[in-house]
Amino acid sequence: MEIRLELSHVDYQTNGPVAVICLNQPESGNTLSRQMALDLFAAADHAQNDDSIRAVAFSAYGPMFSFGGNLKEFQAFGTDPEKLVTVADQWHKAQHILLTMPKPVVVGVNGIAAGGGVPMTLVGDIVLVDETARYRLAYTAAGLSPDGGSTWLLPRLIGLRRAQELIFENRELSAVEAVEWGLATRTVPEGTALESAITLAQTFAKGPTQAFASSRRMLNGSFDNDFITQTNLETQEIGANMTGVDGQEGLDAFINKRPPAFTGRR
Image (tube, rainbow, N blue to C red):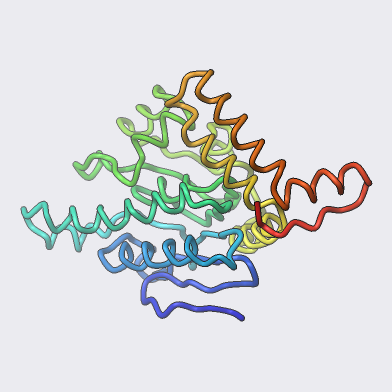
């Protein structure tokens, strides 16, 4: 049964075992407002806790992914930092869920990703970018410092020097450059980012969900662990997966040269 949440700034609907989350304020460039942060958290939290969901496609409606923060709303906050902190807290919780939930996430990037729109694109395991898309961090151009996990994600994905270049110089990257730098996985034809993300998420939803979850956990923690700690984790995870339902199914299918029928269970 298809599920659709009643949210005003983010569209959430299910397509079988895939949750499709789309920023849904195209008339404002999908800028991040207080309401969008709240809605994005609600959508991410629902996808994480719905056991019938085995993969997530995350994208945006309209000609651009996101212009970043809603600066007019932020300006109206005046000099009270707590109002902006409330927006950032909700958004950061949503970012964390999308980055760490035990299900694969595919991001489809259409058009411009600027400011906070950039770290939104980085939470996916696979990032498919429209061949006409562009990236520009733009925070310091508005007198602001980065958020959304930018200073955690960027050094891990592209290295410190390139992260500094994007933050301090506000360099704009094309879709091809975003792939070359490591911000995105590959380009897709113009106008197909959302469709491509859903198609790939549907493929992942038929896969070994628990093995994907293990891989997410280990990769996210790999920069903080030494080699022994990391390989101990690998031993624990592969042992748990191999003896589980999907592990046994995968081994039997491989040995008997047949397609596996994964259930998403360990």
